[in-house]
Length: 128
Image (cartoon, rainbow, N blue to C red; front, side, top):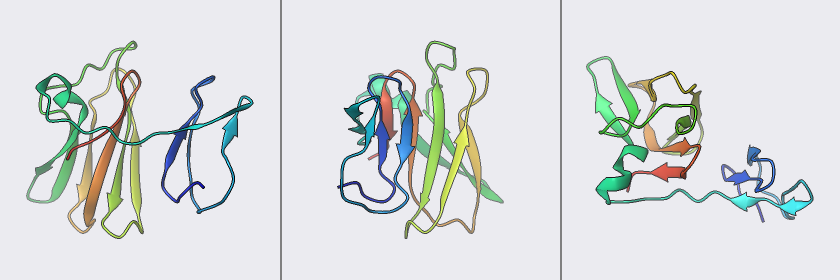
Protein backbone atom coordinates (compact mmCIF):
# COMPACT_ATOMS: atom_id res chain seq x y z
CA UNK A 1 0.00 0.00 0.00
CA UNK A 2 1.31 3.43 -0.92
CA UNK A 3 0.64 6.19 1.59
CA UNK A 4 0.15 9.92 1.02
CA UNK A 5 3.43 11.91 0.78
CA UNK A 6 5.67 8.85 0.38
CA UNK A 7 8.38 9.11 -2.28
CA UNK A 8 9.18 6.19 -4.57
CA UNK A 9 12.10 5.75 -6.98
CA UNK A 10 12.51 3.52 -10.02
CA UNK A 11 15.74 1.52 -9.78
CA UNK A 12 15.93 1.34 -13.61
CA UNK A 13 15.29 4.87 -14.91
CA UNK A 14 15.61 6.89 -11.67
CA UNK A 15 12.16 8.47 -11.90
CA UNK A 16 10.80 9.66 -8.53
CA UNK A 17 7.08 9.91 -7.75
CA UNK A 18 5.24 11.26 -4.72
CA UNK A 19 1.97 9.73 -3.59
CA UNK A 20 -0.84 12.30 -3.40
CA UNK A 21 -3.55 9.90 -2.17
CA UNK A 22 -3.37 6.67 -0.16
CA UNK A 23 -4.00 3.61 -2.27
CA UNK A 24 -3.68 -0.12 -2.48
CA UNK A 25 -1.57 -1.85 -5.05
CA UNK A 26 2.03 -1.58 -6.04
CA UNK A 27 3.76 1.29 -7.81
CA UNK A 28 5.58 -0.04 -10.88
CA UNK A 29 7.94 1.63 -13.35
CA UNK A 30 10.02 0.05 -16.14
CA UNK A 31 8.29 -3.26 -15.36
CA UNK A 32 9.61 -3.40 -11.76
CA UNK A 33 8.22 -2.40 -8.35
CA UNK A 34 9.36 1.06 -7.28
CA UNK A 35 11.51 1.45 -4.17
CA UNK A 36 10.13 3.41 -1.19
CA UNK A 37 12.53 6.23 -0.31
CA UNK A 38 12.68 6.28 3.47
CA UNK A 39 14.61 9.30 4.74
CA UNK A 40 18.00 8.47 6.16
CA UNK A 41 19.04 10.04 9.44
CA UNK A 42 22.50 10.35 10.89
CA UNK A 43 24.54 11.82 13.66
CA UNK A 44 27.68 10.78 11.74
CA UNK A 45 29.69 13.89 10.83
CA UNK A 46 30.70 12.32 7.52
CA UNK A 47 27.10 12.64 6.27
CA UNK A 48 25.98 15.76 8.16
CA UNK A 49 26.23 17.79 4.95
CA UNK A 50 23.15 15.94 3.66
CA UNK A 51 20.67 16.85 6.38
CA UNK A 52 18.48 19.97 6.26
CA UNK A 53 18.56 22.41 9.14
CA UNK A 54 16.71 25.62 9.98
CA UNK A 55 18.36 29.03 10.15
CA UNK A 56 16.05 31.52 11.84
CA UNK A 57 15.96 35.03 10.39
CA UNK A 58 13.87 37.95 11.61
CA UNK A 59 11.46 37.85 8.65
CA UNK A 60 11.63 34.17 7.61
CA UNK A 61 13.15 30.77 8.27
CA UNK A 62 15.72 29.32 5.91
CA UNK A 63 16.13 25.60 5.32
CA UNK A 64 19.69 24.84 4.24
CA UNK A 65 21.22 21.48 3.41
CA UNK A 66 24.28 20.86 5.52
CA UNK A 67 25.90 23.01 8.15
CA UNK A 68 29.03 22.11 6.23
CA UNK A 69 28.36 22.93 2.58
CA UNK A 70 27.07 20.05 0.47
CA UNK A 71 28.93 19.58 -2.82
CA UNK A 72 27.00 21.04 -5.73
CA UNK A 73 28.66 19.52 -8.77
CA UNK A 74 27.18 17.71 -11.76
CA UNK A 75 28.35 14.42 -10.23
CA UNK A 76 27.14 15.08 -6.65
CA UNK A 77 24.41 17.55 -5.70
CA UNK A 78 21.13 18.16 -3.89
CA UNK A 79 18.22 17.71 -6.31
CA UNK A 80 15.46 19.17 -4.13
CA UNK A 81 14.30 20.08 -0.64
CA UNK A 82 10.75 19.36 0.56
CA UNK A 83 9.33 21.13 3.62
CA UNK A 84 6.17 19.72 5.19
CA UNK A 85 3.78 21.61 7.47
CA UNK A 86 3.27 20.03 10.88
CA UNK A 87 -0.21 18.85 9.89
CA UNK A 88 0.94 17.72 6.39
CA UNK A 89 -1.63 20.08 4.83
CA UNK A 90 1.03 21.95 2.84
CA UNK A 91 4.31 21.10 1.15
CA UNK A 92 6.95 23.45 -0.21
CA UNK A 93 9.44 22.01 -2.70
CA UNK A 94 12.43 23.68 -4.30
CA UNK A 95 14.56 22.13 -7.04
CA UNK A 96 18.27 22.85 -7.50
CA UNK A 97 20.82 22.75 -10.27
CA UNK A 98 24.44 21.74 -9.65
CA UNK A 99 25.52 25.40 -9.75
CA UNK A 100 22.99 26.60 -7.12
CA UNK A 101 23.02 26.84 -3.32
CA UNK A 102 20.78 24.25 -1.58
CA UNK A 103 18.61 26.45 0.62
CA UNK A 104 15.07 27.82 0.58
CA UNK A 105 13.47 30.68 2.52
CA UNK A 106 10.17 29.86 4.17
CA UNK A 107 7.64 32.41 5.51
CA UNK A 108 7.37 32.52 9.31
CA UNK A 109 3.65 31.67 8.99
CA UNK A 110 4.53 28.25 7.49
CA UNK A 111 4.45 25.90 10.50
CA UNK A 112 7.44 23.67 9.64
CA UNK A 113 7.01 20.06 10.70
CA UNK A 114 9.94 18.45 8.90
CA UNK A 115 12.22 18.89 5.92
CA UNK A 116 13.94 16.37 3.66
CA UNK A 117 16.71 16.76 1.10
CA UNK A 118 17.36 14.53 -1.91
CA UNK A 119 21.01 13.91 -2.85
CA UNK A 120 21.51 12.47 -6.33
CA UNK A 121 24.11 9.99 -4.99
CA UNK A 122 23.10 9.29 -1.39
CA UNK A 123 19.30 9.46 -1.44
CA UNK A 124 16.80 11.12 0.85
CA UNK A 125 17.90 12.71 4.16
CA UNK A 126 16.11 14.09 7.21
CA UNK A 127 17.61 15.56 10.36
CA UNK A 128 16.68 13.56 13.48
